[in-house]
Image (cartoon, rainbow, N blue to C red):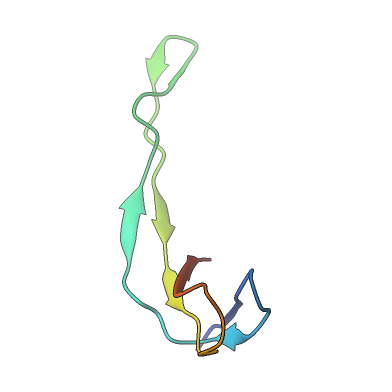
Length: 57
């Protein structure tokens, strides 16, 4: 299982909140359309005292 550190407090988290795909609205290279998709995994911060509830990897 992969982990990511909370950018606010540095606590490592392996609890994935959800998954979604994101991409730019439009991209072209040399006049040809290009599709770019990024899979983003938001994590939940496990530190209760931290103000950052979720963060993206």
